Image 1 (tube, protein in one colour):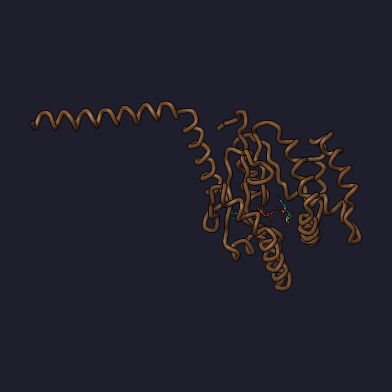
Image 2: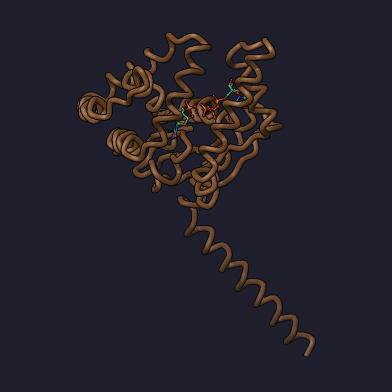
Length: 249
Ligand SMILES: Nc1ncnc2c1ncn2[C@@H]1O[C@H](COP(=O)(O)OP(=O)(O)OP(=O)(O)O)[C@@H](O)[C@H]1O
Ligand SMILES: Nc1ccn([C@@H]2O[C@H](COP(=O)(O)O)[C@@H](O)[C@H]2O)c(=O)n1
């Protein structure tokens, strides 16, 4: 399926572990769209510019200009930089990312960078504010949901965590992220379609999203035909109704 057209972007929000990255990536791949995970920007900036308990805001401002200058280089750099990390490091970076995400200027910088990259159509952007702040004009807006226990299970599996203490850490981290993201997700739910993924596999969620997109596309391309068809049915029903009345009189 290839649905590239002007102004067609997809924004996906959801709490930690709801499946934004895995599902967003698959949807992008299936549609031949470019995938952008806004969480990676927070993680990268936190790991590079939040050192010794100090957030280097000036360096982050300079980084914004650098990244806007060569987006494709940095998109790759961000991915490689974070791929190298161990599970333990990923948890720590996640905590630092969560800290820096509370600073409005950093949120604005990251949103600005992503908006500069997403100038055209054909992007899937995931985050906790993708539908409201990063891509408020996205045509398809979704919020992925999943029960808390399901998300803890998914995250422990994802990080290959088995010891009880480490599972407890995942549990408390997730709870903290949920509290931090509460308002953002509440806003997102006002503008987006909610999909609960607790009892669905990744493939099932992807299929549901693709079906929804096909339906939106169908509506766009065929709206005139649909209106003409409804009018036709309406006029036909009226005719049948009145001819029956005339006959009975
Ligand atoms: N529907 C699903 N069924 C089973 N496993 C899933 C499903 N969705 C996601 N997962 C798995 O759950 C884990 C977390 O998913 P993912 O990283 O996509 O979540 P996320 O919403 O992007 O989280 P974060 O915001 O913390 O990055 C991954 O290992 C992924 O493979
Ligand atoms: N749009 C976003 C994306 C991320 N954050 C914060 O960054 C942390 C790491 O993100 P992951 O999606 O990779 O887990 C996350 O815990 C958030 O605190 C954000 O605020 N907005």
